[in-house]
Length: 436
Ligand SMILES: [Fe+2]
Image (cartoon, rainbow, N blue to C red; front, side):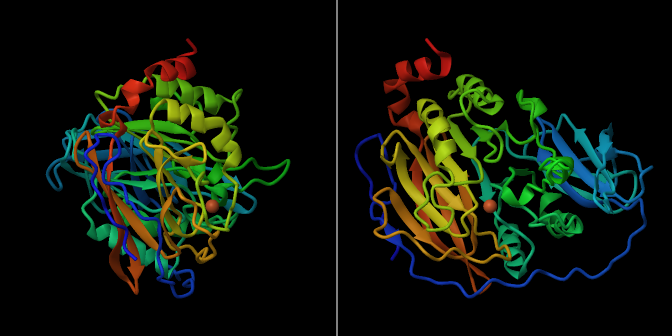
């Protein structure tokens, strides 16, 4: 049954789905992990190229070479083959048991013009890539898919995302499903390169990124080395949580697998970050993390409760609009919710851990469907979030329907800044975020 839209005359919560529904489409089984034929390249050839936002008007280009002496330079410009600027970056590498990574390059380029196509080459050789910078102002479109892995369904999801016109990809955790087998990070990097070299991919860590070996390896070494995010640019001391601003959105990316209690660095960084958000400049406040807080699937039930207990009051005080999570291999969208029940000043929570990994779908749901759950369905797919202006955003979820993207859930979301919630709760915000 499709969700039904309704419009109220109130300026509070508009165009949120009225009926709570459960999709009745059941997917076929998971697909096998893709086979990647051996395709040797010169050792200095750039591989696994991906880009990410790196502070105002800047982009980080990341790639890997087998050659440890390859330079970390990026040549770039707005005409193909004509590079008007060069940036020199940094590099790292790591060892994991018998595996030695290639040289992992991270080079920040810019200042870049908004909404502009740039052509670039990594390390002075290899193919030319092109990227498009996000717009400076709304509208902006985000593609969203978590728990990707590298199966036949992943390929299907990536093909669908490639067809949509989007500016930035948001990935709420569980990227490669390498699970300690390091060469899977390399095959994943090459699998996503066509998309991730063209639009910024902003990611957070999931449990499948945690590859700790007691007394020997801490978690996230591979993830942190390969997928450097703008944590330094956003005043964080960890690659596991950071924030960025793009067009009219302030986006906070949190870590479900690092400390989040009230004495933790992450908690205090989040509190300070939220206190500085300027809703006139960025009317939309969006948060991304891995383990969902509002999940009516039987899979991973209550796993997010500890983080929610610590951080939901902060996000509620700050009037966060939309929270995106993964982890559960299914799709679910809530009404605006806070403290376990619908609340017109709470956030819309979207669980979208359905990118296509090898573990398959989480089909079993709690019954009855909670009143805050607006739509839920165990299928692979991806989401698109188009923020149209300071008051309205259009969300759609596209199921991989036998390899065709089918729009199966959609809703308009009205920003809290246009609702009166922010003005009404100014004192509470000051007390919780600023302590006075
Ligand atoms: Fe997960």
